[in-house]
Image (cartoon, rainbow, N blue to C red):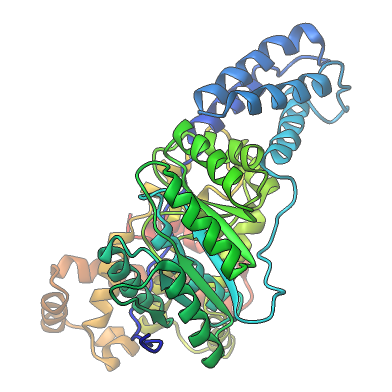
Length: 474
């Protein structure tokens, strides 16, 4: 058995957008809006709304038994519900829907369980193509960054050497150790040898990436049962493609019957999914959804919060998740350094501007962030995100990087010949350099007002300079 291989690191990328519930969310908000102006929710005026909710859920690929249970609870609570003086019937209906969607999605947030003596084992199961291997790397990075644990990645897919190579490459990207297998080893042999190596190397969590199939087969389930029995995992997670619809629900039920699942990871939630799998899988497997995966990026993983997700489905935003994401991605030391510089009266130079632009780019996909905000019903997060030109931000960073340290500190030194050199270095036009310098001047004035404590003046200054759109290159 080869020893654990520590591989080099590559920069991680950022989370992509989230649109799994776009269609369902729009339908449910329209239904609630149809109840506006009613003084009371009665059986007559609620009947049509409940029927529409039922159709919206079915069209979103929610399993029929789940739809029946959810609708029965909504109808029972909605009929005859009193409307508070400060609320409208549509708001009451949304509140009821939110609470019942939360219940269907699992109720409370369920965290990973690692009380076992290290190394704890995390066993990933699922069909081929569901995203197990990528999810293994995402979980390793999450455990390393958020859980402050040392994970180990192990490939058990002896039938597909490409799967082992993929996991090895991903281990390199997230900078965690990886155990390869050698020809002739069984999945159980590999797992047991990896656990031995993990104990020697003070590993906290061993993540086992198991084989998959394009369809369910008895030998696959037998292999998984044996692995679960012999490795005694603290977590057995079913990884499921949220875009697979009813096929995913059927697979979830089969895996749930065969294994003692402790949780579910929904993948590809940024794709063209209709949300039905997320609303069905808890009921079908009895296991809580613990994570949502987006795209191929190794940072594309979110903890699943049923109540927050219900609010997002109903267009009520998810401010708590937004705050947590900002805290993870914003460099506090850099922000405090800039604040101190402004308080001391020092100017806002081009290096400071580059740092601020880089912070915005580090936030990742703007649509993902905007969807967590409680936007008005007529505001589309996708269209709003498209108005923020991240390509322009990258070009602006490239321009500043083409300058000398002295030019960044003293922009007034940048004459015509310097502009020509800077533009050539960034692969852009002189007009792009002029536009950047103008925007820097606008930001410099705004920051100067902020340094004097005039937040209101700063906001007016930004508006007078073309607003946020002007600073973002629109």
